[in-house]
Length: 521
Image: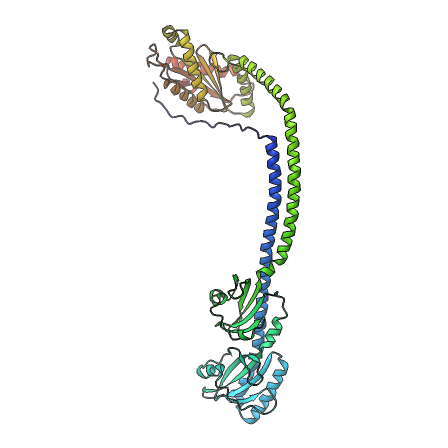
């Protein structure tokens, strides 16, 4: 007896029942309405992102422009300081030299509108000369922060100090100063340029940043120099504990952020940028609420229109579905009659093509299917296989148990054969007496042998008692053949003939086995 082998199941094709037209129509209407609302919501959200993105770009560009303006403004003042120091260190501080410098300072003040004053101080903090007419004030500025810085630092670079009130004019100013030295390199004094904070304030007010927007110009240590809107007590305030400075501006040269103010609770989109040449940074803030106000109004209008259109489509769809239901109800009786006639015809057709004992296809159906599948295999070039099955020692079984038991045995075997084929295209047929044929389209010889072996094992495992069989149970023998038929070169009978020869070879070899045409070569 052949050793049992595992048979891999072949894929089956599941036929899905078509959905009712009313259900499909309902789904269609729901999908149309949902799609319309989804598209509108997506459009609105996309417009929301675009509004924020465009504002972020515009705010970043404004921060860039303001930082460049501040850089240029301070650079112009600083350039004057460099020229004055060169003259001081070359010509000295004699009266004639200071008189020439006085005229030069007055000329620079006239040319640069941002300058509030230009002054020169000696190492003790006393005025040597300034850009104003009249006597020099007898005021000592050695207590000023910028003076202490230059006296204690040998650096010759520009120093921008915190905002202060001018002692000569009383206005808020930003100081830009540079140290000059004696010939031995010791501290000789400083040159100071002051920029009126109103110069920046007036420039910043020329930009439209909304009612809740703001602009800051601050030192890199967080000290505020200029603010729009202008708040008097905000000048000189330290921002080092503000999130925009602590988490962003102190860590990177440029960037953007969205955050809520701890002072007024307004959520703002903020862009910041450090100046390229001087230790300052600019911050521009726009209210998110104001930025999105136009978007919000547009969104409400579009959503209202989309909702009304969706409602109209839903009502129209409901009416359409109702009419479909009425039509289906009107056609129901006719369909039931048609189904009854169809069922009757199918029953008659099954009776004509089915073996009454086993429930398998009869010889008539087998002959028709073999012709059709043979022709299709010729067209497609696919392999066609046939398994011929014969019950071993069946005559002895009938002699021992009688024909009624033999019929029941054939029914069990037929049910097992039907259960062993996986594809709807496979056909199991009662070929004659106790002989069964299984037609396997699109199957090669190895696949057909696997199917035959699966059937042989399944019938053996039924364990139907049969004293006349050497195995003690009912067994089968199977012959298998498969080939790709050639037009005008093969006929269907060749497949039957080859499978039948293989079947007799299996019986001759001892029964309860599968033999293929390849085994005969």
